[in-house]
Length: 253
Image (cartoon, rainbow, N blue to C red; front, side, top):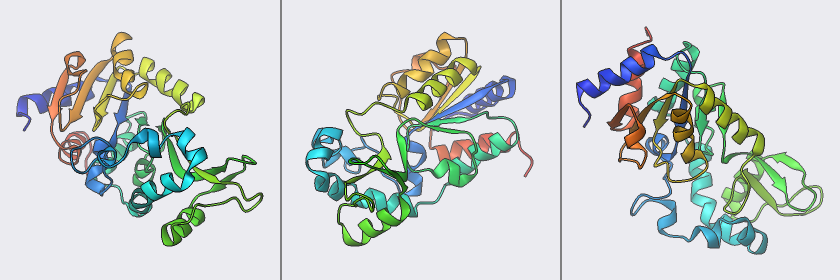
């Protein structure tokens, strides 16, 4: 549990910042029922090898394996609702205290919560792309049909396999989104990391980039990270407890 002194330091960082950016990972969405990738017993990688089921190479050869693995996550993601941590970040943005979110998540819960500036560096489930004709289509209908029937979605135009617009192992991150995320990391004078182990590059390298260009760093996470030594304040705690409390210090509800 974090101390009052640590929380007061976090308040001071946000109060004195002119341009604050948040970097969020899976830990902000686990209270919404979406599992992370690395937690013992519940992490998505505990029961599957990512190179076997979630790489672009295996997807092209055996798309059914990917869809079998992703089925419970797709169902959870489509039905998940933002939690108090997502809402707190949206409120901070609406009140001018937060200037944008860089997220490693693909669940779109920040947008559902009302955040307007969200850089999704690992893609999203809103659209799908045909691997044969490269047509981009809305994902809702295809994913809902897949959740019901468990059959691999196909393109209505050419019959090719449809792939969700999430970044698989071996795929390049969306260049424009990543470049904008790096730009925001260099521009901010405070980066708040929420619910990320910071183990996955290049998104996990953004806090170091922010610090190198003069920003302060606040890390809120359930476990220590390897970049804690760079942080001005580290709060070991649950985002759904910490962020609403932090937001309420600046926003009159």
